[in-house]
Amino acid sequence: MLKRVHFGPSILPFLLVAPQIIVTLVFFIWPAGQALYQSLLLEDAFGLKTEFVWFRNFITLFEDENYLGTFQRTIIFSFLVAFSSMSFALMLAGMADRVVRGATTYRTLLIWPYAVAPVIAGALWVFMFDPTLGIITYALSYLGYEWNHKLNGTEAMALVVIAAAWKQVAYNFLFFLAAMQSIPKSLIEAAAIDGAGPLRRFWSIIFPLITPTTFFLLVINVVYAFFDTFGIIHAVTQGGPANSTQILVYKVFSDGFIGLDLGGSAAQSVVLMAIVITLTVVQFRFVEKRVEYQ
Amino acid sequence: MIENRPIVTLASHLLILLGIAIIAFPIWVTFVASTHEAVRMVQIPLPLLPGDQFFENFQEAMNRGITGAGNLPVSVMLLNSLIMALMIAFGKIAISLLSAFAIVYFRFPFRMGFFWIIFITLMLPVEVRILPTFEVVANLGMLNSYWGLSIPLIASATATFMFRQVFLTIPDELLESARIDGAGPMRFFVDILLPLSRTNIAALFVILFIYGWNQYLWPLLITTDQSMYTVVMGIKQMLEAAEQAPAWNLIMMTALLAMLPPVAVVVFMQRLFVKGLTETEK
Image 1 (cartoon, rainbow over the protein chains, first blue to last red):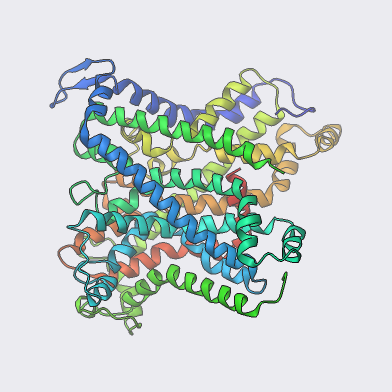
Image 2 (image 1 turned 60 degrees about the vertical axis):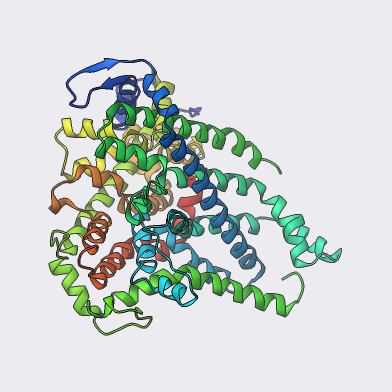
């Protein structure tokens, strides 16, 4: 951690860490502490009286059918996003790894959606699936299917999953391709000499060897679906219809800023913090260890 | 190439091209929409081939904006986004470089304590502390300002970790010889450490620029003054206005303009982008 050769104590290092520490304390630690504190308070509707209620906000939260529904929905949503974008990216990376010619060009053509803001990704997809105008809605109605995500909750969920997965394919592709390209060619050649075809080689050699990357991406994708998809949901459905696409992050926002339920929103923030901490620990402990398989 | 199977190879190429087509289709639709007149964009079916109104739409969006979304010209929003993205990227890089330097090269009291305070920011993304952070910023009077847009986002554990990693690989002999030559800590930092971490700084810049440009929830909360809107937020306002009077040609033109800078950064600085992505995630 510390260099063997280093500078002795003086005022300088304190000045050097000061900017970051001040920003962290003022905008990270203090607000997080406030959220913890507020989650233990109950405020009446007009904000006149506050009462210290220990864990009642949490008990209310976990007895609330609506919140539990949101929790369950968030898990389904993040599973669907992770699964669809990872499998699509895995397939493309497997192909790109096979073809020698053009792999770099393909990479360039596939990685740019990473740079598209979630809310813009949402705008693009909502435009294509617009119930009256959308180009895909039109194609679907040609096939005899009436698409309207403003009324149908399942369709709304499908749309936000598609938009969220679309944006994440680039990232997954990049890491899958890098992992595949780092597998020693001799292993693949040996398998080929033993008569294994491309598909067999993929499932018996390549896929097991990239397991660490797959685990890593799984965590990253779940974090992405939990926290970074706010913009997509806000642009596409605003949590509707009838809360069918409301996920945890969206609920914190709508309860806190629109519903003005401070205690409830703070309690939800604390639950989210617990989730982030768990995921970070999983990423650092479990995934980091798995990487050292060789 | 392991073995020669032309059919499998051809199939692979075709599948990748199909994948690229699926990924790129939304952008094509966006581009097409931005090249037609408003009238054409409410007729079903919508066009799949570009029209001839691209420059007219471009000028209208850039100079006049969209009715119902405050008429704020997109050029103003783009400028706001650029300032915010640059402030976030430079701010994060600057404070992380300094704190990583202090933690790696100095022995001082509470060194590990500071390190853990920085580490904790990893676990507190803005989404989980929305309300209380908003209160802090409001109390400091930073609503509707570039400072309020950028400073609460610039503490970064990942950047600090990355620079720490880079500094740890720099040979000790460099510091020893710098000292013999009479260089103080800041001289060593500016003349030796900074030049040696140049590529890492550039790679990180690419990632952070995209991160800053694409911020949505935070600007949404703290800007109520329209002249401070960023382009990513502006899109959402336009979508809401589109419920009554759809001006899809202009909305899609704005979407195109909003994604152009970060996409260009990814495509043209691909090598740095990949480096930045893989190193910050470690």
